[in-house]
Length: 289
Length: 277
Image (tube, rainbow over all chains, first blue to last red):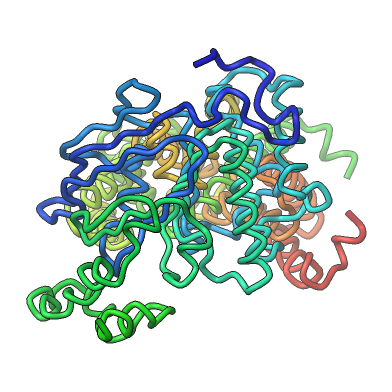
C-alpha cells in the first residue's frame, strides 16, 4: 500500500493511483437508531476499491441511513467501520457523501465551480489560504466530469445528470476514495442514466469504491459488482451473480407486506405498500416466485 | 445640499447610516440564505419591550439603556426560541412566535410605567439625525465585530448554510455557529435602531440580501453586494430625506424597497440585468 502522493489523483484524467484494488472497506455489526427506532441493524459488508456496490431494499429499509452512517453523518449505535485497516469513527475525508436530489438546496447561490471548490474546504480547514493546487484539483475535477463549460452556471441551471456530475466532481476535488451516492439515478432521463452508469463504472475502474442506493432492480446486474439487500437488517450481501436472486429479493420485498399493518404508524412503509416505487418489477417478480 | 453636508450632526448621521447600511446589508445575505427573515421580524418586535425594560432599569432613556435592554430582550427571545426548538418537538418559528408575542405584551404593560413615551417614538421609527458620538462608536464596534467574524468564519458558515449535516459531520460546530449568527443578527438589528427604528430595522437586514440574491450566483457577491446596496440605500435615503423633508428611516427603507422591486422585475429571469452584468 503506497503512501498517497501529494500531487495525486486527478492529475491524469482522474486516475486514483494509490487506490487501485487495494483499499478495503469492512463494515460489521453496524446499527443505527433514531431515538428508539432502529433504522439499521447489524449490517455488514466487506469490499474494496474498484467495486460498485448497490444497496437495495424497500423504502424505509435504511439505505440512506447506511450511506449516511458510513459517511459519518448520523451517529452509530453499534458496529465498526474499518477503512484501509484503520477504524473510522467519524467523518473521513476519503469518504464523500452525495445527497439525494431532494435534500439539496438548489436555489443556493453557488455555481458549479463554487460547489466543486467546497470539496477543497475539508483540506483547507476554516482559514487556510486557497492555494494554486486547490484550483488545479477543481479544474481537473470539472474536466473529468465534463463540466468546464458549465462551471459558471448556478447549480439549479443544470440538468439532473449534470447536477449529479457536479456533486461527483466535488467528491473528486475532495480526493475521496469512497463515493456514497444516495439514489443517484433518481429523476434522470434515460440518456442521463446511461451516461451516469458509464461514469460510475469508470470511477470504479479507476480504483474508486462506489456505493449507491438504488431502486431500479432491473439495472442492478448491469451496473453493479456487488449488492447488499437490506430491510433494516441485511438480507443478503455478495457478488451480484450470487446474491441477486428472486428468492433473496422476495425475502426483502415480498415478505415485507404482512408487516405493513403492524408498521402502520410508519408512513414510509405504508406508502411503499400503497404506492410502489418506480420499478414495480420487484413486487411482481417476488409474487411470481 | 452642500450646506447640510458641512454640519457635523449631518456628517455624523451620514457616517452612521453608511456603517449601519453596510454592516446590515452584508449580514442580510446570511439572513436570506438561512431563511431567517421571519426570525428577524419577530426580533424587531422584541426590541420594543427591551427598550422599555431598559428605561425602567436605568431610570432614563439613554442610548446605552436602550441598546442593552433591546439586546437582552432580543437575545432572550431568539436564544430562548432556539433552545425550545432544539429540546422539544416545536419548530423554531412556532416557539419564536409564542415567545416574542409574550415579550411584546410584557413590553406593552411595562410602557405604562415608562415616563418618556414621546422619545420612545424615536426608537420605533429611528432618529438618525440625533445620533451621538457614543452611539456612533457603538455602531462602529458592532460593525467591526460582525464583519470580522462573518468573514473569518465564511467557510464553515457557508457549509453550514448549504449542507448542515455534512458540515456537522466535518466537525463544524453547527449549533454554536447558529447561535453566533443569531447573536450577530440581534447586534446588527440593535445597531440599526438609531437609524431606522425597531419596526423598520427588519428592512435593512433583509432587503439588501434579498435583492442581491435575485441577481447573483455567488455567496460572496451576495455578502459584499448586500453591503454596498445597504450602504447606498442608507446614504441615499439620508440625502433624499433631507431634500424632501421625509423621515430618514422610512426613506432608507423605501429606497431599498425600490431596489428590490427593480431587481425583481428586471432581474435574471427576464435577462435584463444578466446581460448587463
